[in-house]
Length: 328
Image (cartoon, rainbow, N blue to C red; front, side, top):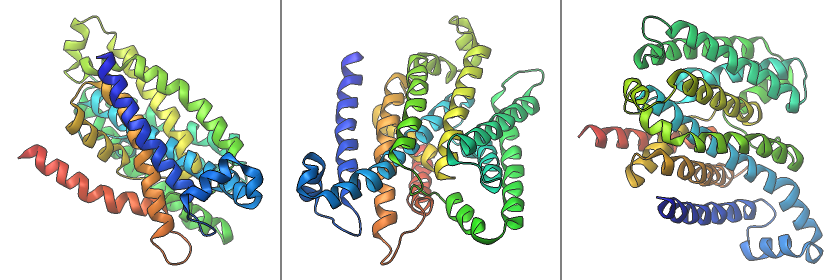
């Protein structure tokens, strides 16, 4: 198993690095990959291009990697806990709650980090608490009850988001609308590095608990019979995932279908073992998001489109295809 995980991780890491190199090579000033690589390795050869790549393009690409990894991993966690292939942070309202908190932070004029990040996390936690409160009953964390509660909370969050956007004026309205559709341009290297340092421990924790996801995907009773403390494990997984998602939403807004498409793609190719799926979705999700961001920058003749538009255009047909094939 360790050998298989290592081989898959190395292959996907190579794919991720290639997409990152392509990502930093795409821009209005230069699109020659070899020249960009040379500017990174030897900054003195082309100081201007080196500054553009390291200070503008690289933070954007790094944020795209983080966002894709977090959203893909979040989809794996929620699909395992709820035993439902449609479950992911957006559908359950976690992303919506984080977006409400982030919008409030933007309206109040808080800095993107840590101000907006804190309000986004508070919003996601409030959504999570509300979902857990609505889902409790005779059977705690019953999958259908929890999923239905998430759908209701997500609908409520969507209404609140539209209300907040409608009462916001001037330039902030445009910024919020563009951010809501997925935007990687408002980050610098320091912020991206801090975000990565905050996310890595979450990746490690979920990977260490990946064997429990295998048991939870077979049912709570099966997991309990194997000695898993299901209540504690589910709470830890939900809070950790909500924390990651809120940080990502606070920086780049809402990105749809990533937590659905990437886990399905990896599961169909690599199997259902979460010890393999967790690192595969972290690396594969990052590469997928960088690819979507490249398309968002290159498809328009002028300017760029929100990355969330590309993820929806790619993700919706692919998800329909995977869903139809799984039912056939």
